[in-house]
Amino acid sequence: MNNLVKQSLRILLGRASVSSIGLLFTVYFAYELPKNLFALIALYSTAASFTQVMIDLGLSAKMVREAPALIKDESRFSEVVRNVIMPSVMLRFFAAGITCIVMVIFLQLMEGLLSAEFPQLNVEFIILLAPISMMFENGNTSLASVFQVQRRFGTDSILTSGANLLEMIFATILYINFGMDQYFTGVLAAQASLFFIRSYLIRDVLRHFALKDLSLKQVKYILKEYWPYYLRRFFRFGLLQGEQLLVVILLPLAQLADFNLAKRLSKYLKFYSDAFSNPLTIKLARTKDLMMRKKHVRTFLFFTVPLPIALSLLSPWIMQLAGGDKYADSWPILAVLYLSYVFYGYSNLQMSVVTIFGKATEVLYRDAIGSIVGFTATLILILLFGQYGLAWGQLIAYFTLFIAGYHISKKYLDAEVESGSQKNESAEAIVPPDPE
Image 1 (cartoon, rainbow, N blue to C red):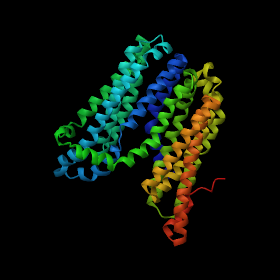
Image 2 (cartoon, helix red, strand yellow):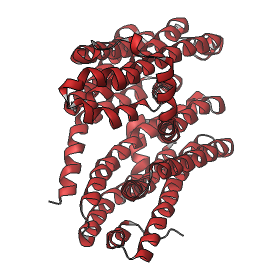
Image 3 (cartoon, rainbow, N blue to C red):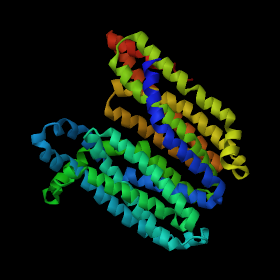
Image 4 (cartoon, helix red, strand yellow):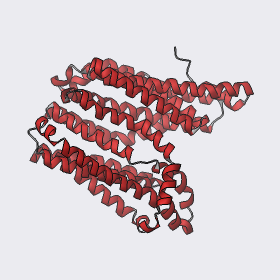
C-alpha cells in the first residue's frame, strides 16, 4: 500500500470513533429538537470557535516557533517557561476573561430578544452559563499549546477527543433528564473537567509561572512581533466563524438549522481531505524525485476528488436519513457543500506547494483573499438566495483559495524554470492545470 495512503488511514482511524459518535449525537438532536433549538446549539459552537480564534493573538505560533528547541535543554527550562510559555498562556487567559465579560454584557442586552425567540428556555440562566463555558474552552485551547510544545501529542489528542465525547454525553444526559436549560450545564461540566485535568498534567510548567515577570514592554513586543500570525489565523478561521454569526441577523433560525445540519454532515470531508494533505506536504518536501512527486499527487487527487462528487449525488438520501422529513427539502444545501470540498482538496494541494516553496506572507495573502472574497460573496448570496447562499459562499471561498494558491505557485515555478533549477523543475509536476 502507498505510504501516503497508510499514513492518511492512520489519521482517519484515529478520528473515526469520536467522529462517528459525534455524528450520531447530531442526528439524534436533529430529530429530537425543534429547528430553533437545534440552531441554538449551532450558535453556541460557532461563537465558541470564533472566540478561540479571537484570543489567539498569534501566541500559539510563538510557542511552536520558539519553545520546542529550547525546552530540550533542562537547564533552560525555567527560562523558557518565563519568557515564552508563560507570556503566551497568560495573555490568552487574559483575553479569554475579557471575551467572557464582553459576551455576558452582549447577551444581557439581547435577553429580551432571546426570551421572545426561546420562550421555553430559562434565558437568564443560559446567558450566564454559556460565556463561562466558552471561557473554559478557551483556557483548554491555550493549555493545549503547552502539550504540543512538550511533544505530548498523543496525550493532547486523547484529552481533546475525550472532552468532545464527554461534552456530548453530559449534555445529552442532562437534556434528557432536565430539559434544554441544562444542556449547557453539561457542556460546562465537560470543559471545566478537561481544564483542571490539563492543568494537573502540566503542573511542572505552571509552577514556574510568575506574573511579576511579565512586563508591559514585553507584552507590547510579543503582540507586535506575532501580529502577522494572528492576522493569518483570523483570515483563515475567524472570518468564517464571524460570517456564520452574522447570518443570524439575516436568516430565520429555522433556515440556520437547515444549514447547520448540512454543515455538520459535510464537515467530515474536511477532516478526510486534511488527513491526506498533511502527510502530502511532508512527502513532497522530503523527495526531489519527479516521478515520486507525481505519484503522491495522483494518489492524493484519487482519494480526495471523486468522494465529494459521489456524496453530492447522494445528498437527497443523506439529508433525509440524517434529519427526517423536516430537513429533507434542504438537500441542495448539502449537495453544494459536498461539491465545495472538491476545490478544498485542490486548495490543500496548492497549499502544500506554497508551504514548501513560498513565504509566510504569501500564505497570509492567499488566506486573506479567500476569506474576504468568501465572506463578501456569502453575504451577497444570502440576501439573494437565503440559506442556499451560505453553501454557495463556501464553494466560492474554496475556489478562490485554489485560484490564489495556483498563481502563487506558478510564480515560483516560472522563475525556477527560467533559472534552470532542477529542484523547482520537479515541483512543476505538483501544480494542476491552469483553471479556465
